[in-house]
Image (tube, rainbow, N blue to C red; front, side):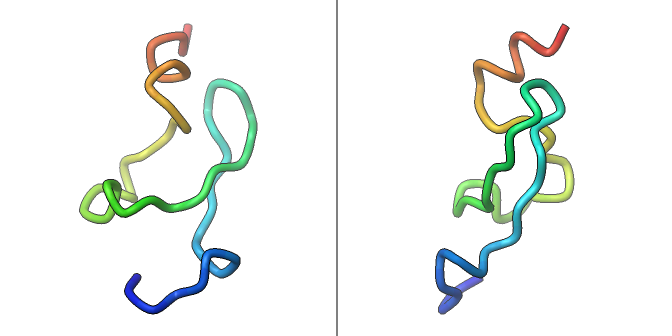
Length: 46
């Protein structure tokens, strides 16, 4: 993802809150498994 402008980053929709969120550097290796936009949504997934 180096050299990609913020507007062109891939996005997903959070499985808990339904809001869109963009790719982050910390998710570089596990982007395929990321389903929630934050730790709060991950903990409140029920």
